[in-house]
Amino acid sequence: MKNLINSVFQILKLIRYPNLAIIALTQFLTALFLLENSSFLGLLANLQFILLILSTLLIASGGYIINDYYDIKIDYVNKPDRVVIGKHLKRRHVLVIHSFFNGLGILLGIFVSWWIVGINILATFLLWLYSNLLKRLPLWGNLVVSFLTGLSVFVVYILFRQNLELIAMYSVFAFFISLIREIVKDLEDIEGDEKFGCRTLPIAVGLIATKRIIYSITFLFLVAVYFLASSLPAFWSFFLTLTIILAFLCNRIYVSDKKSDYASISIYAKIIMVLGIISMTVI
Image (cartoon, rainbow, N blue to C red; front, side):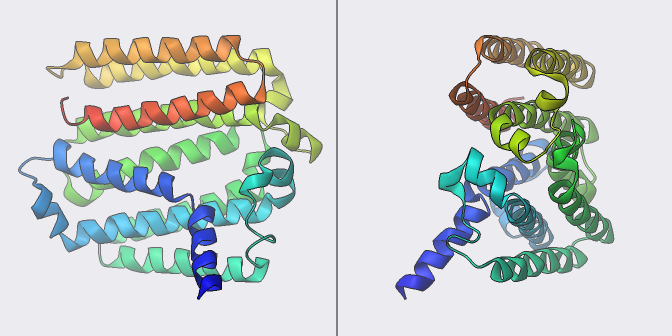
């Protein structure tokens, strides 16, 4: 019994359950606050919507698993305390769990929409490609993860077909903040990545150039939000708050030069993501 409980705990650790909770919360609040005539109980009773959330979480879990499977050696350098595969769970068992999660995620999509099935298959392929190849190339891996993060918000529109502008804005929000965070994580993990031959953005162009790219992405982020949300009643308070938060983020990146600095910035970016979710309640 003790071994079973430990195995379940290690699987939860492997699939990043706090990140999964953020994904589920994002999709639920997107439907609750950005759709017309939606209610808490109504969404809980909507089987298609619940299956959409479950399928998204299963595909994301599979992505986390295969990413750690390919990154065992790198993680022993960058995050030794987070290594699960080979230390607590056997590699072959992990591959079985990965295949099960992906298969079940795609299967559940059938009961929602064939569009969702197609998206889940695409996401499964991109997550495998990211883990196997793209994350070792400058920027490509960051873009794929950020695209899938934004897509996890946009699928709510695909199911309900309401309020395209609002949901698109939050999809763009999720894309850009995820992109910034992924590049910051590359700054944090530069030691292990370089040791094992990865060509992430900081390794390919250097720290200073990478920071300048982050500043440029932040500017594009604000421009995109401006054009997507300028017609909203609460736009200026939202936009000014976002500008201040991102200015603070850029300042933190500018003065940072240690692994611990970038780790704290990565957490800060995740907090911005959560604050963005909360802003749905008032926007």
